[in-house]
Image (cartoon, rainbow, N blue to C red; front, side, top):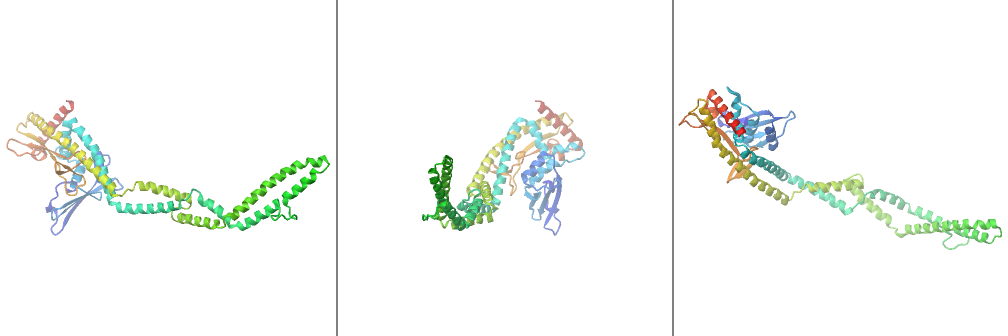
Length: 433
């Protein structure tokens, strides 16, 4: 029983030992309620789809519960066992007397009066648990996330300071190759310019191609032969082309001479880019992709106190809504409890149990110390389970003056069968009403 949330007794601790342990392995696949409990608790599930429940009780009476390696309130083990364990005895109908089933009895009897606020409760609870989980995750990982964020911010600052352009490293490599051979290029361009335009000092012995073409034109223009004169236009075209080439060669030489320190500047720029590619990616395009990814990651890594405070506020707002829905569910169950008890008692009178009476109690389950699913209602901390905050119990008073006891303790095997029959009759009437 302790492994599934039952009462843990100090007498179970062996003399001379400090603690007693009991554990069990549960397979819950396909049981929706159990799957929800395991997921909400954050339990680690083994590869075979099972989960281990552990209960420990110390000699000082302190009790601890774990599910899948995670510390959980004892009530979580009880909820899980209610979903998974069926008690078989003289009557297999005993399973209907489990706490979860008793709660289901009153909910089925109450109909929409419970179902509607319970649906609202479950929707808000799901969001509430998600916010709690996110707040816990961010709080416990805030230091780690802050360190990661600092590294990403440092990288972005370094990259933004250099401000590389896409493909810039390739362009610089080509430019450096050209600038590294600037003397050779200057000589080649200067000599080509002289060959086209002539000597820069006007040496008549080195007229260049343009001067020679001009001389040829002069001689053809004075020729008396029509055939020779017809060649003149073609030489004029060559003269125009040579003039253009000569001008471009002149401009190229001037460009080479315009900034002698350009190579040094380009090499310094290449060094800045290489510093980035050594740290962040193989090339500049990869560095820019790293920066884009870093910015996206930073958007999801808000570890500021303001972000945590905003989450905490959202958690508290949802808790207020959740408490309101839980109270509405509790109120509806309490209202239905008296009618349910009266109808079951009336059915028992026709089953040779005229002296017996049924009572149905609805009590909010107190939250245990450290309960992460604790909810404050009317100043009391209660456990917010998947089906509300209530424990429902069917009690049987065997006769006038007898104390009310849990049905399975107060009734004999035969009486228990009649009680269960009475319950089924009442629920059948409720379903058709």
